[in-house]
Image (cartoon, rainbow, N blue to C red; front, side):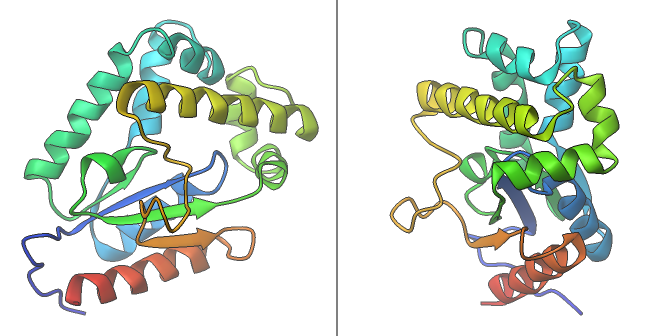
Length: 200
C-alpha cells in the first residue's frame, strides 16, 4: 500500500510506549518489519548504559531518580530522530513527548499479567540477567516499583506522566489492550490505525 506524503504536522514515525511487559519491544519490531521502517528502542539503550555500570534495570532506574545523565542522553537522541528521522518505529516511554508529529501508541497490560508473561516466555532470560524475582507475584511488585520510579523521574524532569491514558491527558492516538490482543494482532491494529492517521 503506497503512503502519501504526511501533513507538516505528521511524520512517518510511530512511537510505542506502555507499561512494562506490555509487548512494546515485540510489537514495535513487528510493526517496523511489516512497514519496512527502522527500529529504535530507548529501553535497550537504557539497559546497555546501565550494564556498563553493572546495574540491573531496577537499580539503574533508582540511580536515574537522582542522576539524569542517561535520561538526557536518550531524550537527546529521541529529539534528533524527531527532527531528522523518518520511517522509523520507536519503542520508548517518552518518545510521544519528544516527537509530537509521530503516531503515538500506548500498549496497556495489567502488571500481574505482564509479570507472568515475561517470566513464562523468552523474556525470562532477560529477567534473570537483570536479577529480578522469578516468582510472578514478586516480579509484579518489581514492575510496579519500576513504574513508580519512572513516573517520579519523568514528573520531576518534565512534568509529564507517560502512563496517563486518560482522555484529558490526550497523550496517545491509539491505546491497545495487549491482554486482549496478542503481538501479531496488536501490531496489525497499530499498522492499520497508522495508515488511516497518515492519510487523514
